[in-house]
Image 1: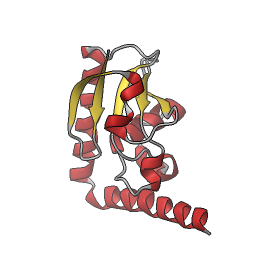
Image 2: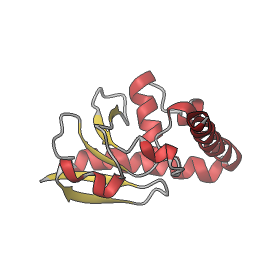
Image 3: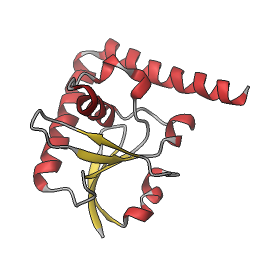
Image 4: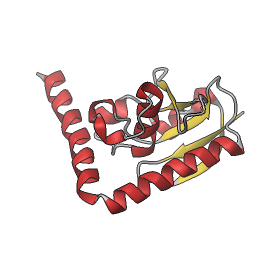
Length: 147
């Protein structure tokens, strides 16, 4: 059994004990959908398990996972800069090497949740634009796949 931290797009979260191969039960269809994320400049990363198909199915963007993905990839935690790389749907954060998340890891994710919540509340228009862009890009990609 593994211990992960499940974060939904609405910013609710909970600690989760699960088998890695059963993560789809919480996330939807998985095909080794894992990305490395960061919440601080300390060089430590976590892995985020998510369903890449969630975006295609119209799932809400997950701003915490998107912010952390951008932080790991570019060093910039401003998740609004790239709606094309947004992660949608619920995400389970685990240790970078597949290990259990620690209390320290969960505290980092919780700080990320607070930062996103504050941004969403303080910068309502910018957040709405980012969210709308993510959903529009997903619809456009779906329309292109159907054609």
